[in-house]
Length: 286
Ligand SMILES: Nc1ncnc2c1ncn2[C@@H]1O[C@H](COP(=O)(O)OP(=O)(O)O)[C@@H](O)[C@H]1O
Ligand SMILES: CC(C)(COP(=O)(O)O)[C@@H](O)C(=O)O
Image (cartoon, rainbow, N blue to C red):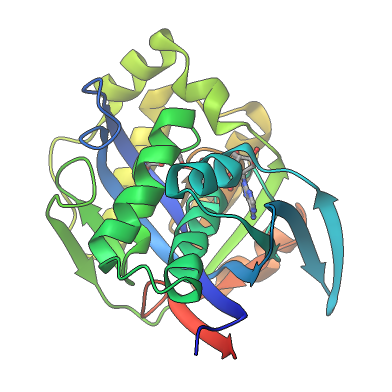
């Protein structure tokens, strides 16, 4: 019996450093880089329907509010798949703030409709469907690849099939967002993309502390740090707290429990764990 509704959770992703790789084909384009797959992301509820409707909801204190009745990337994904369904996406982190929520929404949606309509797509094919929309819309380059699994990650090449090193760690990551930043605005700027490429680190980290150092030197060299962000970075430095800027968002992420009280002085602080998994089916209703 085909299900009537499927719920899937996909983790988000904080990118720490990245190098765009644009080949002209969204399937082989993407980025190399390092980031953290986080235990907060997007939950998608896909329900059989005669036409595609999309609701983007933000949840806080167990109450969800509709923030948008549209999502061009989800709409395009459904058209690519030739499917119609009611799609509701739920997140607690802020949108357009560098938490990889566009990727998480896309990847969760593909896995949900794959189960809802019994498409038989492999995890890799699901990820490819999501990745190519992300890249085509310039809403991300490497987040879908990262969110296929858990851990803090080093992506050695662009796209879904490239080598990804994944490392487990149970330390807490704390993050704040000072203001939204539309990823597409940066990815569509040739001048910024060239500067970002030049800032890419020469070696890959193999420790979490080393990842923070790589991300921080990348952020400093990228020219993306605003005065407000710089102030928080310096405060963390003064307290010996590993810290960097979320890519791409006007935000900060820092390592360990001591970061929470410090970041609380600057805004709402999100306490995050490194995810152990990628997308997960949460519920299937008959
Ligand atoms: N939770 C979500 N549900 C549905 N669509 C989303 C979601 N998050 C982002 N998107 C879509 O992706 C677009 C780009 O988001 P983006 O700025 O890349 O956010 P992020 O930095 O969190 O990935 C948004 O304008 C929206 O259309
Ligand atoms: C940094 C970014 C290009 C965008 O990340 P976000 O703003 O979270 O969509 C990411 O996709 C990456 O390739 O590392």
